[in-house]
Length: 225
Length: 243
Image 1: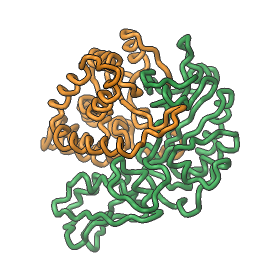
Image 2: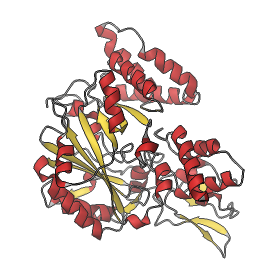
Image 3: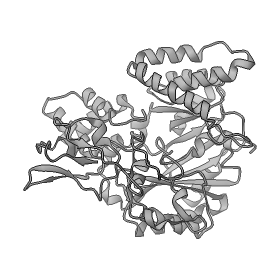
Image 4: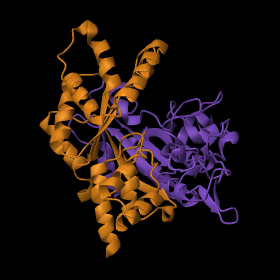
């Protein structure tokens, strides 16, 4: 999926907006057996439901447990696969970071944990390159966004797109953005609350609430001038 | 999805939530209704739970309408006996390229996200794009939901029964040799004048061992601009594919 590729915004507004996706391939080159082994899939689904029920509602606790899991000492080779499966079931497949230091720390942990899953990072190329160099990681494959083609006159204004394109599947309505901005102007909610309400529509977790607050504040200023 | 007219009080709160404005207000009835033809079954309205009267109701989706839901809702709520042969909206693409080796040295991959951002598309519009680039010899990705709806993967032609279906977005995924990159971009610029939607284009390639990026060099050479932000697979996946 391309969902973190087409985020809009100026270089300034995209600065310090980092995403990390962990993906385990269903199609392994040369593998004779598909990873969609039914038992393995059932276990993963059951684990996913448990995690969703008991941990996803408490993001702070989940983050702490993720940190512990990623710092586990290396398991004996025999158990390594099993350990990796447990960790991969638990840790968030998509995380957002607002500082280079957190981003670098997390990537370093993933590199050390050696989960075997692919890791994809999104953000400004210049900033990502600097961060990867710090932890001695070399890019493998790159994807560029060439922008939007077609009936572009149907698109909402850029300031709205900056917010709606943060949702990986574009589930945030431009009308909702405008409504919430109006609510802020009418003193009914704060920019932080507006960002929270927008973020609720994004299921995949690609929406960066901290960035959204800044974008909303910039939009309010732009609207006033 | 439908709005139970008996419950709806016409407050219009829901209208702000639909990402493609498929919810309309009927003045004479003073109620909200979903334009079924425009609705992409993304279930944003249902999941948001914003309706004070809980008037949103799921309608069982059969083929081919279930395609809308499959492509538009990241969390599939409905299942049908007949669905897209490959689930979801897109594929692993470059995200697992370190393991799958899908895009190799000397190749360029394209992801054409039709309907994005936020306009939506009928599949027949995506077919126009697919057929245009098929003519210049791209290879469509096998494990892609949109490709799985093609009646002919050589030409990019879709099955007739799915063309009218509307989705929030669908991804055409293909690849070709790096030297054809300018040609494919020309074709995309041309077909863009003939589609009734928008599409976002992504370009993928392997990074050379010396750190150079062939797609970047090719785009710079032909003066095509690209965004300063993008995606990088950092090569931690195992087992690593042969390059």
